[in-house]
Amino acid sequence: MDTNKKTGIPVLNRVFDSSVRHTVEGDVPVPDYKPELFKIVKAYGEPIIVQTLAMKNKATVEGLLKITVLYLSGNGEYCGISGRIPFSKQLELKEPVGERYIISCDSVTDYLNCRVVGKRRIEASGEITFNISVTSFGEAETFSAEQAETGIEYRTVTSDMLGSSVHKQTRFTINDAFPFGKNAEILRINAAPAVDSVEISQDGVVVQGNIFVSTVLAGDSDDAVTRRGFTLPFRRMIDSDDDFDVASADASLVSCTVTPDDDGSIEVEASCMLTVDFYGKSQYTVMSDAYGTAYETEIEKREMSVISSVENFNVPFAYTIQSESGNIIDCFAGSIVANWSDNSSVSALLCTVTACDDDISCNEVDINVPIDLSAGQNDIVRANVFVDTVENIGSVVNITGRASGTLIRAATAVAVTDIKTDESRALPNEGHSIVIYYPDEGEDLFEIAKSCRASYRMLSERGITAVDGAPLIIPLI
Image 1 (cartoon, rainbow, N blue to C red):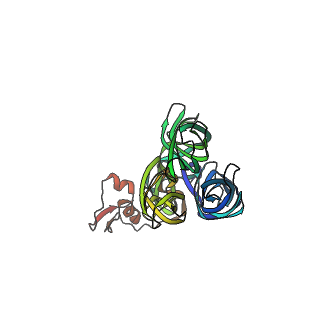
Image 2: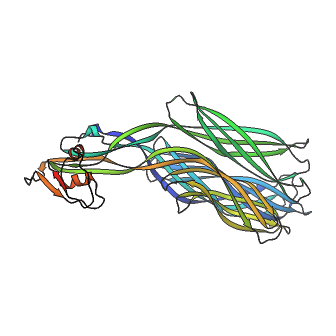
Image 3: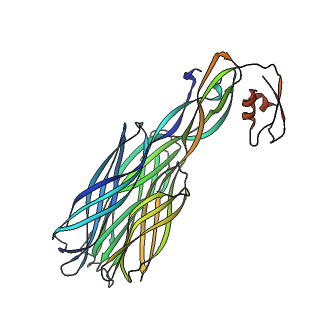
């Protein structure tokens, strides 16, 4: 058949899907305004993905390993510091990507070793595991009903598909002031953005959401440790000159700083990277199967992945754990990733929930928190998981949080990509005008017509239907 007649449909091509490890090393200095180091109580690392890029047959993941260290000073104060160690990981893809692609990357700290090398310096080394999926947008050439030649019988399937048109990124910073204790010592800061809505306007999309900030403080009240949470709402307009029908948005944290003021307030500033994808919707009718009735015919088919829908999600979760260390004065969750489970749903994996007791000793427990988000094995999930609150009553710890991101649902389509007819090899004609056919269980009319080399279109027009076990009188061509 004439290949110039082929119709292109948008398809997804997974060019990388694996877990890779990366070693990170660096120093964490103790600022001059902090007490000198005496003993490290606990250190944990939180990978922050700042940027993902792909070009030709390589992909790069860049980010920062945020290291938080809880320590005792020489006079017994419970203190906290944090530092950031940059990292960059390059990957070899199994084939080059196109101009448009999606990179889904979750990261978790496998281990982190910190040791004191001076009163104001900590040496840190650790390992990060990246769960990375790189999907390239491409185009597959297929046949439609209008392109069928004489002597070729076929059936078609009609599907709504999304094709990626525009991919835009923008960085923004927001800040706000909140009431705060004058004598409070900031031990830890955690932050994560969540997109609440993506509204299509005449000139583009309006993205609204919140940046959730959680701080752990010492000296804010009579308690040894208290927690304070802050919410920074954002609203951003992303322009687009291209035609589109659907849009999705993801936000990732770049940095967050919390600065106490002398008047008892606190200044919170957060920077985020906002990624918006615009999709055009189209309806395609393609051949899903075909066969020849007059000549030897070779049919090539391909199973391909296409985008059926795109949606943003913001799903809360809650979990309770029991500590064996007695009265808990502090508790935090780190190394959090979104993970596939066996029942094809997404779950938040809180790898290192650490509880510190009255004696400033720590123990860890691994927990897997299920999230009610149904997804297929070929779907693409880009998610942020954030712990809103960690509340303890004695040895019981209650954790609440949320998972937010984009779910790109992929459907599987089978289409005819090539038809080769050898007109020098005619199919034998046995001289029969009809055949009596006994269909197998579940065999449909197209399969029956293909087995008999009859006209599927003619059988359909005559209203012939297959009934399991009942003989059919099939007129031949």
